[in-house]
Amino acid sequence: MQMREDGFVAVATVSEIDQASAQGRGLVVTVGEQTLALFRHLGAIHAIDDMCPHRGGSLGKGTFENGFVTCPMHDWKFDVTTGQMPLGGGVASYPVRIDGNDVFVRIESV
Ligand code: FES
Image (cartoon, rainbow, N blue to C red; front, side, top):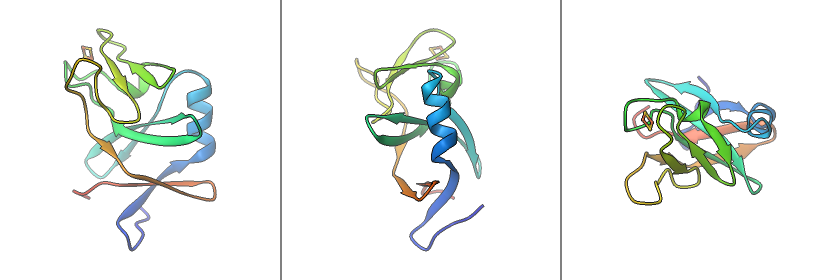
């Protein structure tokens, strides 16, 4: 795992995330003990927890459309830019930095 001095960790490439988002899903990556789902929306890349708080569905494997991902298990919907659900609740989101083709995320607990 490549960690920068500012605590950001390399998790994927821009190309991998773009390819997944173009196919209407997220890119699932593991960082330490955590699993994240990465999405491209309106030019920016966003990182949220992959595990749905309902019953643990993989949000990265859900349907991604117009900035929202729908859980593949029971259709709960999450804003990928914040991790929040429209009616409240949600999952954590993480700061993202891009350096060339490399995408870095900062996870406090790593
Ligand atoms: S596990 Fe995600 S909606 Fe049920």
